[in-house]
Image (cartoon, helix red, strand yellow):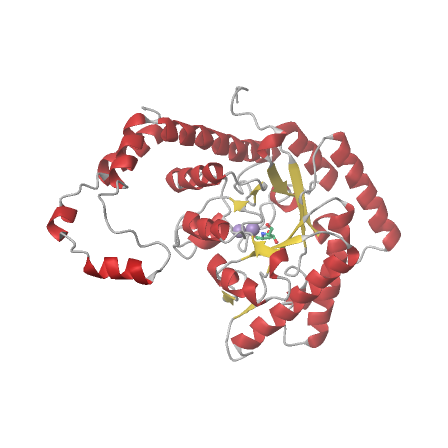
Length: 388
Ligand code: DIG
Ligand code: MN
Ligand code: MN
C-alpha cells in the first residue's frame, strides 16, 4: 500500500495483542494454517507496521508452567524486542480460559480451589504486566458462564466475581502498580452463556465494587454486535460515566459467532460513527485491535490485516473531520436542535415546575418542524463513499 497520510504514528495509540498477530488460524473445525510466530517476531512485525503498542495475556508470553528463571529470560528478551522496535506495552491481561482447569470458569467456578488458582494466576499476570509497564489490566471472563443454570445460582456468580475483582484492586494498591481495570463483556462463546454479557451489565456491576474508581470497561465491537446491539451507544454510555478505560476494535457480521474481523471490514458505517465519537470526545486511550486475519492468510496477509485496521481507522477519522466541517450537515444539525422557546426543564425547582405545568404546547406547530434525517444520512453516506 502506498505510504502517506494514513500511516500510523505513535500518537494514534494503535495497539495489538500478541494473540491477534499470533493467531494461527485454528478454529473449531480446522487446525492451524500458519506456523507459530514468537512474541519477539510479533513485536518486530508490529514495529514494521507502525503500531504503537503490544498487549498480552500472561501465557501469550510465558508458558503456564515456566520455571522462574525461564520466565525471567523470556521477559528480558521480550523487553529488549519492545525497546528495539519502539513498541510499548499499554495493557496486560490474564488467560483464565485456555487451560482445562478453567473448564467451568475461574473466578466464578464452583470449586474454591479453582477460584483461588484463578486469583493467584491473575496476581502473577499483574506482576508481569507491571514489569512491562502496563497501566491497564483487562479482565475478560470468557469461561465465566454456564451451559446449564442448574450448576449455580447466577447471583452467587456475581458475588464471586465481585470478591475476585475487589481482591485484585487491593493487590494493585498494595503493590503500587497503579492499574486501572477494564472489564470486557461477551454474551456467549466459548460458554453457552457468559455472565456479564454486555458492557451495560458491567456498568451496573462496577458501582457495587469496593474500589469502583479503579474499574471501568473494555467494550469490544464484535461482542456487543453479536447481541445485535449498537456498539457506539454502549461506548458512549461508558464514556459518559467516565468508565471507558480501554476499547477492543474489530468488526462483525450480525448474529454470527465472534468473528474478530479487521476493523471496518464488515460495517464501515457503524465503524465511522464509532471513530467519530471517539475523536469528537477526545478519547485518550489505546485504539486496541482485538482482531485477527482471515484463516486463509499467510503472515504477509497478517501484516496486511494489521495495516488495514490502522488505515481504516485513520481514513474514517478523516471522514469524521469532513463530516464535522460540512456546511450543509452543520446547518441541518442547527435546524434540528433549534430551541423555539420551549419552557426550560433542567434542574428541578418549584417555580420551574409551575411554569412547565402552565405552559400550553402547540402539538401541530411542533409537528410542522422538519426532521431531514434522510438528507443528513445521505450526506453521511456520500462522505463515506468519497463523493463529498
Ligand atoms: C477476547 O475478546 C478477549 C481476550 O482476547 C482478551 O482477554 C481480551 C483483551 O482485549 N479480549
Ligand atoms: Mn472477540
Ligand atoms: Mn476482546
